[in-house]
Amino acid sequence: MQIVHQGFDGLDVTFQGQLPDAFMDILEEAQLRAQDDGKNALTEYNGVFFHVERSGAVGGYKFRCDTGPSGAKWFFKDTRKRNKDPWNIRVSCHSLSLASLGLGRVRADIYEFLNTIEALLPINAERISRVDYAVDFFAPEFELDADAFVMHARYNRETNEELRTGNGTSGRLGSIRIGKSPGLQAVMYDKRAEIIAKSKLYWWKVWEDNGLPSNIDRKKPEASRVWRVELRAGSNYLRRKWGVNSWIDLHEKGGDVLLSIADRIRYAQTSQDENRSRWKNNEIWDRVILALKDDLFELTSNSTPNDLKEVMRDEHLRMMKSQTIGLLANWLNAAQVQYEDETDLSLIAANIIRSAVDDETARFIESMEKAKKRYVFLES
View: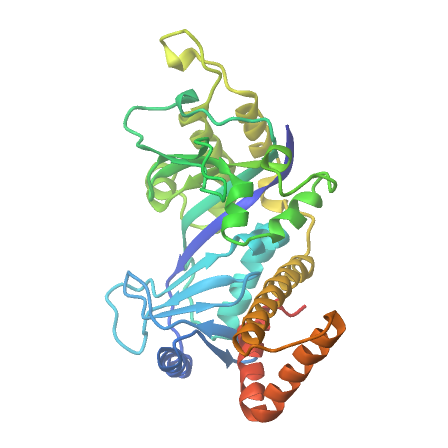
C-alpha cells in the first residue's frame, strides 16, 4: 500500500463584493452568444480569457464562468441590480489546480482574478464554503468493505457497485459515501475506475510523479487499482461546528477539522466485538490520519500545470484521431470506394480530406477558429 497523492481536492469560497457594470455587460453578451451557439462562449476582460456558460446556477447566480482545468469555476450575481444578499461572488476551484499548484498558489490566483475583473471587496469579504482533502493509495489488492466503517447511526451511507465493463460487472464494491453535504462526509472509492469513466487520465501523470510504478499494466484493474479516501467539510460543519469562515480560520483550524472527520467516521478492522467503537483502525485509515498531520497547506502533487495540460492534450488528440479514422472508414465504405492495397487506400483518404478542405475552405477555417477557442486552456 503506497500513497501516490495527498492534498486539497476541493475548495469553495463565497465573497461579498461589487462588480463593475462593464464586466456584467460582457458576461451578459457572452451568455447570449453561448445560448445562440449552444456551447460555452470564450470571452475576455482586461486580458484574462474565460468561458461563459449558457445558464447560471442556484442561489441567484445569473452567470457561470470557467477559467479552464487548471483554474476554477466562477459564479456571479448581477450586481447591476440591488441584491439583498451581498454575497455576489462564488468560486469553486478545480481539483487539477489544487493538485498541481497547492492551496497557497490557488488562493493567490483567486485574488489575482478578482483584481483583474475589478471586483470591489470589503475587508474580510471571504467565507469558506467547502473544503475537500484527498489521499490516494496504490493498493491493487485492497477490497472495500462497507461493514468496516464505524460512525454514528445518524450518518447516512450510500454505496455503489463497480462500473459496468464490456465483460459485465464483478459485483465489487466500488465506492461508499458516508455523511451528507453541507455537513461532513467521508468517501472511499476506486479512483482508477473514476478517472477512466470520466476521462481524467491526467491523474496517471500525477500518481507517477509521486511514486506510482510506471511499468504497471493500466488496462488491468488488479495490477493498477488506486483507491481514494476523501474527507469533505461543508459549510455547516465548517462554520457551525468549527467557526471557520476566513482564510485565517482555515489555516488555524483546517487540520483539526479534517482530523475530526477522520475520527467521527473511521474505516476499521472488522471484529467479533459487538461494540464497534472498540474496533481498531484499518491500516489505510491510520495512513490517512498521518497524512493529515503533515503540512496540509503547502502540499502539491509534484506535477506542473503544463505537464498535466500536455497529458490532457495528448489524450484529446488520441481520442480525435480515433474518431477521425472511424468516420473516414465509414465514409469510404458508404461511397463504395475501391482500392488495390494499403498505400493506395492512404492516398485515396488523403485526397478526400484535401478535396473536402478545398471545397469548403471558409467553413474549415471557421471550424478551426471555434476549436481554438474551445481548447484555449490546454495551451501551455
